[in-house]
Image (cartoon, rainbow, N blue to C red; front, side):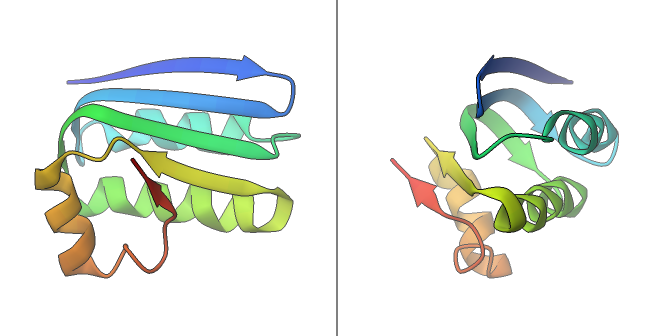
Length: 100
């Protein structure tokens, strides 16, 4: 189960994720990334309450990063230690901008 909270203010968009971002739930986030990033210059993922991310979830982050590389900035903040380990092992630490 994945909960997606969205907060859009002008060209800023924050997505707060809680639960598990896996093959069963990544399509929901992918739809948000595909359909709601037009005109967005600052995208923030708050994943403080994300418990798990699979390779399918990582692909959605990568897709969002590629989109934002063309139109602005993307930040992933409040990364739990368990997910930080996954980001380090997969090399996503070099791809994503991580903030406290």
